[in-house]
Length: 247
Image 1: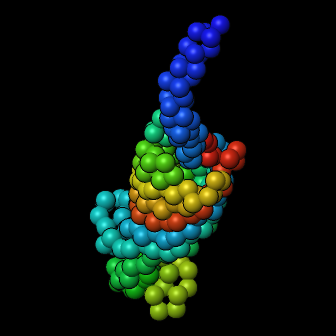
Image 2: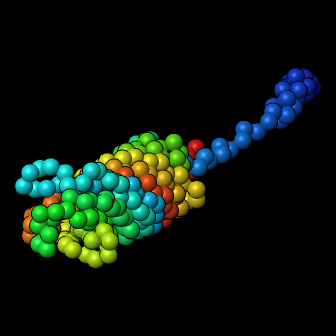
Image 3: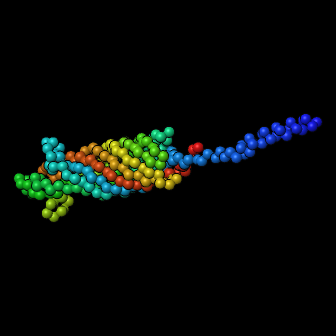
């Protein structure tokens, strides 16, 4: 009996330092979740900016320019709706928008004859005016957490008025309004500054089909092409809470 008690005491003395050392080891900390921005989901937003395009008036019968090319510029504001899918760092999306546009440009044309003076020119102001525009586009981007870089392209449509005015009196002589179809392409970046909110900046180039309108009888119809460069900023609200936790 004494022998067993002595052996147990010696074993306890040997193992005691190891147990004390193990108790002094630091505990492993629990993993800390890292917030990752997820761009997947429906969103709506508003956007506004400016546009700078070019237009001209071309005689349909001869194909010659009644005017040289001139700038058409103004502001725009409107709404946006879309949906994104995120796969790893890649983001695919569909987006549509519609905007009110106040874009206008003129050219002083002094070569137009009229019924009262068919042999001689008189000065008129040729103009192009864009009143609204909309797009339906695909988006493809690369996300760096809450920063998204993207390219975009698709269909564009606009309401355009073209006409001529008497340069001296500014009286409207002839005009026509048409809905122009076309295409658009561009790119931008978007910053998620809050769980459901993001801000974007983008540039879009738009090219619309040409449409004719009749001037005075003595000259006949003119064709009026139009293209646009749109630069705008916007804010989007994304539904569903786009922040997830990753360990």
